[in-house]
View 1: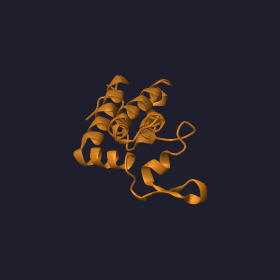
View 2 (view 1 turned 135 degrees about the vertical axis):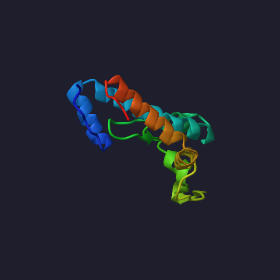
View 3 (view 1 turned 90 degrees about the vertical axis):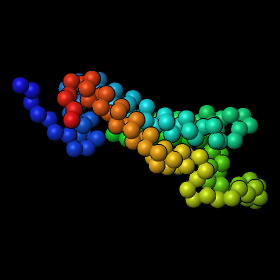
View 4 (view 1 turned 180 degrees about the vertical axis):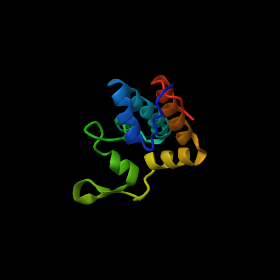
Length: 138
């Protein structure tokens, strides 16, 4: 008979996977990236483009315990201004209306969360990893 392993949180799940096989946490990170990709695919088409760098800078960058989406960086340092607004340029002369909740990333996240798509994909991805590791999942 198999030993019963109870897992309460994602960090504990990652630790249990690592005990079984050192490569399994990598599968967990890839599963979290799948869920984050839903947000990326929704946000990218909404971002205005001239060169396409801001749009291309939106990427999923998950860890083994965190689904994460990043944007901007060295590739498009102006991304935060596009998404949230504010003043930039010489003497802060270029103004874009400020949206505390942002225009693209958070909007995509909340839309997918409300629709249930993000939690569903996240749950399916985590169950896939657990089954691939040999866990019986209930």
